[in-house]
Image (cartoon, rainbow, N blue to C red; front, top):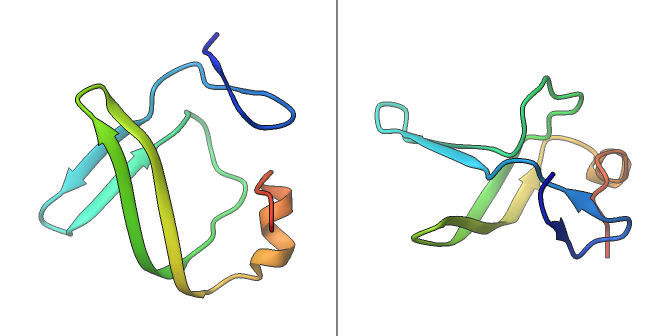
Length: 82
């Protein structure tokens, strides 16, 4: 099992995220864990990737607009809303 990250309750990541860049589509795909997603949220905006030679630390997404009701779906995805 992986190391806990600082959230309550603790979350364990068993594998590092995998990232792939498809030049043909200009798409960066980051996979955090295996399986099928239950929720999909689509938005438009800016992102920042924080990383070093060991891989990705975090990704910040600054949305200009969302195609989903994030106030409804984010809590279901264990995303805290401030």
